[in-house]
Amino acid sequence: MNWADIGDAMFGGLADYGDILALVSNSIWAGAVLGLVGGLIGVFVIRRDMAFAVHGISELSFAGAAAALLIGADVVTGSIVGSIAAAALIGWLGARARDRNSIIGVLMPFGLGLGILFLSLYDGRSANRFSLLTGQIVSVQNAQLGWLIGISAFVLLALLLIWRPLAFDSLDPQSAAARGVPTVGVSLGFMLLLGLIVAVAVHIIGALLVMALLVTPAAAAMRISSGPVAVPVLAALFGVVSAVGGILLAVMGTLPVSPYITTISFLIYLVCRIAGSRRGRVAPA
Picture (cartoon, rainbow, N blue to C red):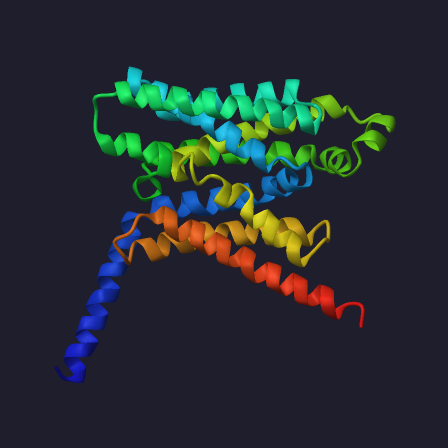
């Protein structure tokens, strides 16, 4: 094979890759939006020690989506109903961390059990059942992308509106309450926003992997920065890189997109943790 043949093969491969990217453009947009909003809301998930809550909400969201799949209803709507129900219960009954963790520990197996029951009764395509656990980001349709962008825009706008009282309540809830911040309302409102973004995230990346975009990017950002602006910006950046980077790698291979997203997200966290620990050792000198 001469250089001309090699050049033609490389050009053909790039052309094929470009055609594939055009087919998954909806998925790339979905990943970018989900990574952005997930990274921002993840900052408060970490600050309020609610990483466990994300997983608990995702289990009820999975149950709602499985129920909708069983009865032939819209899966996104079922996922949202399950997420909102879980978020409301956790926010209402779990004001204290100990109570919250107990409630989540009760809801998680209940939601997972219901979801498995509904899926076992479903007689349709097995791929539809599997996608609820691991997502289907590479087959995002226009309607699904519209749902994702609409819900994400609402969550982002609401999050910006309550950012200051939410940040105060996350830092020092006792002082926030003493200063007149409606801590119960802020907490419940945040849980509902978290429930909404978890619902769309479950539909895109699956119930088992939702923490890769709603927890890990923010945790990585906090390892290398503590600034009130730098942390959200870095968390959003890490979320977008994980989601979009995972999709771009997945279209070149034969593996599902989920392992790529989770691996990139974990590697970013690992690098940030190492960089943060080295900076901590150097700082006193």
